[in-house]
Amino acid sequence: MIEPSAVNLSSGEGKTASIKRINSLEKQSYFREAVTNIASEIKAKVILVGGNRNIKLMDEILNSTDIEYFSLSRTILCEADLINKWVENKDYNPKCISCNKCWDVVPNSCIFNR
Image: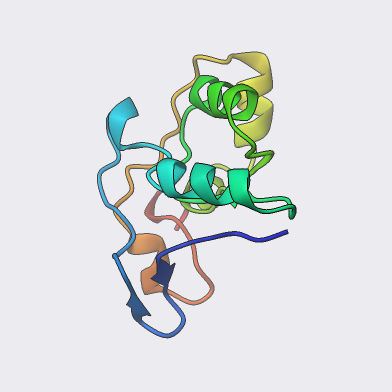
């Protein structure tokens, strides 16, 4: 499996910073186009990382591309039980506000959980 990304927080380098304020559907799953292209060209399983916040959008991507897996980071740091919430209600909107403050402390933790 590979997880293409343009962000590398451990080295401080990358093509783009983690995107903040992912407050609309259009801003979500922001590496979707690039990763869809990669997934269609290689035989390895591909993971989509970057702003995955909406289970319906992830379902759409899962059913219309070769992407089979999704990575969640900030949203899970904010709500460890997020997957259960989506199982109960596919319209649930995660509490994560994409402020990136979770990366300011070690170990990483959401401002809502400190």
